[in-house]
Each structure stands twice: as structure tokens, then as C-alpha cells.
Length: 423
Image (cartoon, rainbow, N blue to C red; front, side, top):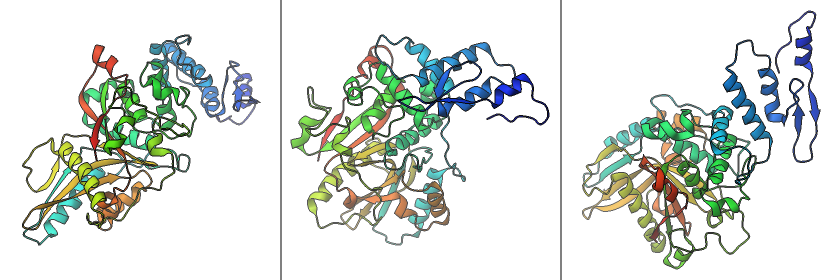
């Protein structure tokens, strides 16, 4: 609340100290003592204070802000009968969205620190028959889970990591993403943007499984929701499914396939999130396993990731290379993470490839990752994952192609599809 100065109160100051709460059946709300607008408790304080700002406010901005608060306080309605048009909702969301708080890593960011560690590791290797090559995405901020979103927010945190890269490295994406706000919004703001994407017709079938509402929810989301949100800005978010051939009919890549599994439905990502998983954190040892089937499946995924970051180039020199590729949203049963690169070692006289994914985990603390990278000690446990750790029966990736879609191409992006890769 605003601060009341000492001394005798004026009539205006009396208004500042009045705060009427009116309970509602659906959620707690409050009545603004100045304009009598009913708003959620989370919004009322800043709204009341806005009536007493000393600086003159642009009437148009105040009008947009007032409408945004009205939209936020009412239930979402993506149907054509909604009183506010999409363009008005966009203007409202631009003023309503809040920048996400996160720990900003120094020394050029986490990717720069990771590069230093990989180069140091390469210099320390003394085996003449071992060639090591690492490919990294551009800049990515790490968004760690908080107490408020622990257990359900990993999908949103990976969306934030993806967006941090897009805003930092792609001029065309920076211009359109979140209407040019130039910052990564917090989870409630992202939820509003996703609802707006649904109301525009992106991923209609997926939206129905959430009843077209996600704001204020703690329900798990996945790759398809990330795709719908990014595609609504014209970004070419593409999905790749990795699974056994027998499961192909269940995937988005097959026309007429069933998106939802034959179990109780919680959302379009039930194949991956029907069970709560751990942090996904595993031992960072190299890729060895007695289970040949597991290694075989892991090799398929690893080779796809390598080809993605290498842009399908056959000859990549040893060393550490920064690529023009963005990070990968990495979904599996119960959890999602962000792949920021891959390391390949060619072992022995046969030059057998051995891979490690380089992964950012939302459940890890950013400061701890930074400390390990700066000290060059223990960082492998946070970031490296070998093929033996890929134990899930199915995986899903999302990446963002270059360019901005519009017209007919944008219309086609409303239907979420995928490319199927057989394990």
C-alpha cells in the first residue's frame, strides 16, 4: 500500500487508508475504494496506488491498464462472443504482463561459463586417440523453479529459457515476442498469453483438454502448449516425437491420430506427465550400459540432437563451437528440461561416437550451477547427461526455426503437428 504521511490527513489521504475486502465464492477479491472496481487480491494494491500517482499518466495507457485489470479479474472466455477483441486483449496483456524475476549470471552468462569449462576439459585430455567436439546454442538464461511452482512449473520454466534465447539472439523474434516487450514474463503472464493463443485458434484440441483455461492453474503443461504459445507470435516452433514404431499412431505426426492417451485425461501431454517424476538429475558419467536396447534408443536421440546443432554437417572439427541454433525444449515422462548443446567424443581406433547432452535443469539452483562452472568443479553433474540416462520410453523435442510466419503459413501453424522419429 502507499505510505500515509504524518500529520493531519486530507480527504484524499483518508481514501488511501481505506481498504474494503469483499469475499467471493470463486476467489478472494477486493473492492477499490476509489473507483469501486472489484479485482483479485493480487492486483488490488497496485491498482489502488495507481489512483494516487504524483506523475501525470497518459490517458490511453490508463485506459488500457483499466481494461487489462477488468480482463484479468473476469473468467477467460476464448469464444467469439467475448466482448473484448483479440487486438484489445493484446494491448491489455502488454501492460498487464510482469517481468519474471531470476538470478542473472555474470561472466557473460551460463553458456559462456560452460564453454570455458568444456575448453578447459579438452586441454586437460591426454589421450591421443580421443577427439572431443562440443556444440552449444547461443545465450540462454537459467530460470529455476521456485517454492510457488515446485512440482508443476518445469514446463513454464523451460518456456522462459527458450524465450530468453529468442529475445537475446533473434532480432525478428524480439520484435514480435510478447508484443515487443523485450523481457521474459512471469508464469501468470505466460498463462494469459497461452489462453490468448488458444482464443486465436492455436491448438484447439489441446485447449479443450484444459477447458480453454490455464490462468491461475497449477496443471502441468508440455511441448504442445509451448508450441501453441510461440506459434501465436508467428514463431515457427516445431515438434519432434521419439518413440517405438508401435506407438506411431498415437502421435501428432499421423493424420487423425489420437492426441490423448486412453487414460484419464489431464492435458495433451499425458503421455509424458501422467506420473510425477523427479528432477531428472542423474549421474554425469559417460555413456556406458549393459542394456543394448537402451543405448540403441539413446543413440537415435543423441544423433538427432547432434545433427540439429551441427546443421547436418558431416565434418565438424574438434573443439568447442558456438552455433546459431537455439536450445531444445526436452520433454519426457513426468518432467521437461532444456538442452543447450551436445558433446561428442570419438573413441579408440574405430572412432566410436560417444555423446553427452548438455542440459539446464529447472530444479537446480542457478547460483549453484554458476559456482560449479566458475570453479570448474562438479559442473558435469549439473549439465552432462549420457545416453544411459535416457530411460524413458518416449521423448519429445521442440525447436524454433528461423523466420516469422504470417498469412496462410501462420494459419497452418494453428494445427499442432510433429515429425516422428522411430526409436
